[in-house]
Amino acid sequence: MGFWISIAVMIVIVVGVSVLVGMNVKDSRKHRVSRDEMMALKTSGAFKERKSSMNGD
Image 1 (cartoon, rainbow, N blue to C red):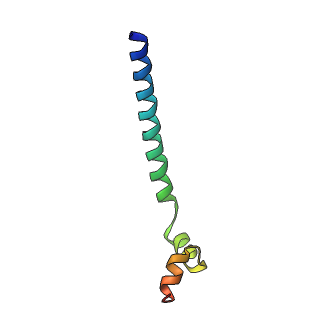
Image 2: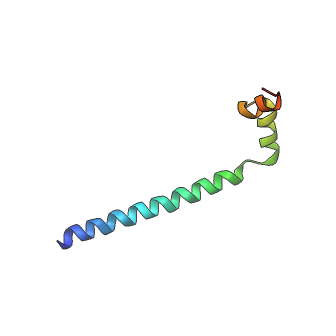
Image 3: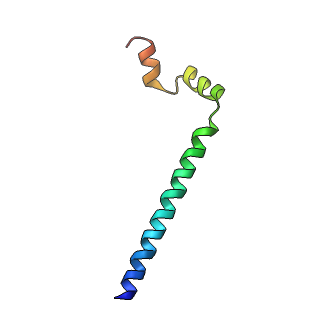
């Protein structure tokens, strides 16, 4: 019985660490795109929904 409890605890710890690492990676990616890079993407038409809404479609 103690073996299965320790396995369950280990799984919970691994899942928790994975979630924390994933959240930290996501936050750091947000800050990497500068304002100039975002403007270049918008003007190049990388975001089609924004481009079409600007044209009145």
